[in-house]
Image (cartoon, rainbow, N blue to C red):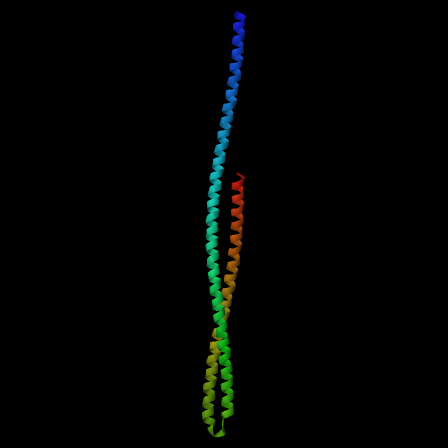
Length: 178
């Protein structure tokens, strides 16, 4: 009988040892899973921060693009104004040419002094028109340069917008993969 009890005790010890090692293995597995869960939580927080940053950058880029579009439209409006001023200058020059022809045709030798006076006034007007024409040509050049700069800014912002959009898509994909 004592042998049976000893056998039973040995069997119980073996079972207890097996249960203890299973419990230790389970505790180790729980510990490993908790560490993995903590790492995943940190990764999720990091990706959430990156997503918020990407959203912020995207919003800034969209605002910047909207501003660039508005500036570009303003530049186009200025271009149209300059074209109108250029046409006006051409008309004034044509009127001046017509006025000079009229003065030459109507000159009479007896009214030479009066005609010379008219020619001087016409030359002065021509000088003024030339000054105005140069001024408007400089304005046209300046506005065209501004337009070119705004177009370059618009293209740069468009590129930044595409990059931000690609990064946002990549980040959204990585979040979906989780």
